[in-house]
Amino acid sequence: MSPPIPAMILAAGRGERMRPLTDDCPKPLLQVQGKALIDWHVEALARGGVHELVVNTAWLGEQISSHLDLLRTTGGHEQLSFSYSHEGEDFGYALETAGGIARALPLLGDVFWLLAADVFVPGFEFSAEAADRFIAGDKLAHLWLVPNPPHNPRGDFGLGAGGLALNLAAADAAPRHTYSTIGLYRRELFGSLPFGNSPGLAVALAPLLRAAMDRRQVSAELYLGAWTDVGTPERLAELNQHFPN
Image (cartoon, rainbow, N blue to C red; front, side, top):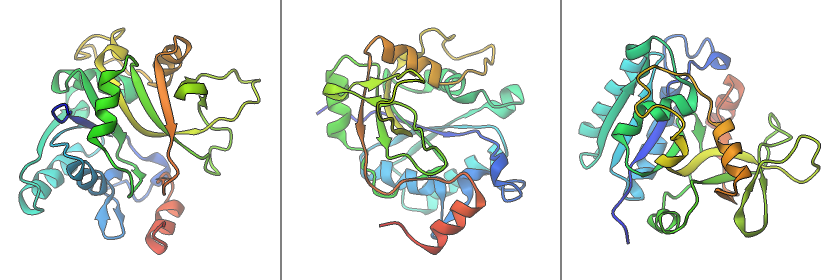
């Protein structure tokens, strides 16, 4: 079994659709069932043996780093190591997903977990076996897809034979699934961007993934456990009223 790989948690978003809740509180720190959203991820990663965590921030980023540093020292997570990519401090704005990852690459290894802080997926396992399979293969990314929620009925990507992720044409009637934001990635996927992104380029992730899918370099699988994109106050309220089974 390979040594544990690091993980990056994307936490730089402004959370515009969550306002006014996010006017004074960054979205990753909103509470679900008595815990900050990001804490659910930290605990799941720790259970999976992932000890090196990189977090990017922009909006109210100092609250996120202060919260996680306190969680590490008082929450029984002394084995964890947090590193931060403070895009707000460095550039005054968030670098979007791929831009933020490229900025953080010097803090990550050749292979790493990636997930967004604003999804709630309490049962997901960041298993060493999944990481080992990915490391042993030749794909640039492996994505976990979920059934399409009401707010994304058309989905994002197809799932083909042999577990290939598919960049389907708009007119293609084949089923699509929604990207959960959870995946395994190789540094090589971001080779078109400056390593460390010193220019502060704001670049989306989806075009890089779609181009790699066209080259048959992305795999995927379907995750059927509870998953919520906590994108509106209504979804947050529903999670706090009814814990998903």
